[in-house]
Image (tube, rainbow, N blue to C red; front, side):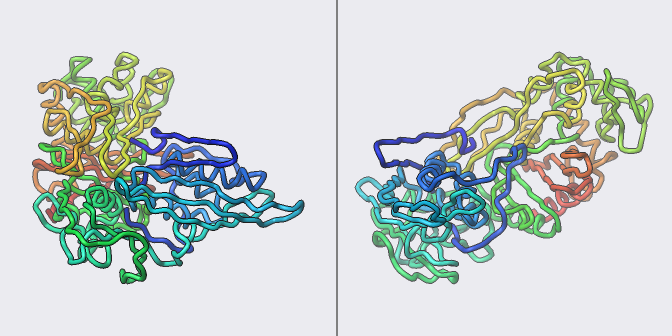
Length: 540
């Protein structure tokens, strides 16, 4: 579930009291890449406030609502602030963080700078509250007041390049292990740190935050330098043994996924799931994809990978099968919408071939023949509208609603209308087809996933037809580039966005008990996604 779904604020008298739930490991610096806007986000007005009091109180209110990107836009260094604030809620994992505005200096008429103090109180464990004062500065820019960003807004002693870590043990011990018991995070005198190679950088803070939550009486908050050396213990004492938590990750799968995306020049991400247990085996993004975990909650048009759902609907609701005759013209008027294929036509063919070759004209017509809620029903059965709360991470699987018009319903049939899915959602869809059951994704063996909204899968006979078609994609269709990686089942997708000049490339599928989704932003072709998936699978 995304942060925006959980909000709360308390305002009393002249003081603003902010309560936020936060959690583990972040780097604080004076710069960084711009915060990524999630797909589907709308533009905002010029940031800032008209007066100093509103600037600081809105900043604190955004923190209280767990809206770190909005808070960062109220600072004069939004990129650096976004990274630090987003990760801050995964740092100490307190039950509450109370921020009280204590002093706001008077601002004479015409002044362009002012400042003040607020206090932070972290409830890290029952009876263990870490409280300190934080000085802040406000500056006027472009007629608006902004909070001057510095690492010291998180703690007054933090300097550029330093970070806060939580240490739970004096001697090095495994804090987080993968599903096979192999270490992922180590806890020791220099706090929590990843094992050599940092195999899961995107999930590092999520994993570390749960270590903090599981820590016993002995733990400390430390300020460390860029090399991980303890500069100062700021709170507590690390005198206990860390409890080892077992994650769902597979070190082998994670390393394979990270190596695959790191070899791609453009923005690339992979999510892999175990089709039996729902274990999240790997979550990987490369540097071009940024620091925000878009693989878990970024929503994108799925393009033709959504034909998996359209096929489920056609088989279940329209009575078709993989061998049913269909037409695949190069260009067709479907309803009032002109639909084109990517430079090919098949004429009279069958559903399996149209699926394998990714014929838009066929699937636009299939969608138009369905009830208004036909695609939504299929998406529901594949988990794209499900919702889960997984300790340590925020997730969005997808958003599929009944089309607002017949033209939109046609476009939805090949994933180009208002249909949206995340990389995690694509992997869940593939896992559902592979297993024939509802999948509950989990990141932990020690901590439960909460099912907010579950789902029921399509009938077995329906999925049998879809599996046949997904296999044909790799043996004779658009996914032939994955044929060398074994018995792979999949569906490619290319989704145009914006003015249509750029497109996202997808490959969604499974092999054995590993379901996966590969998403390449701005790749303009699904072929590189197929190649990347094959590289990932071959390395397993």
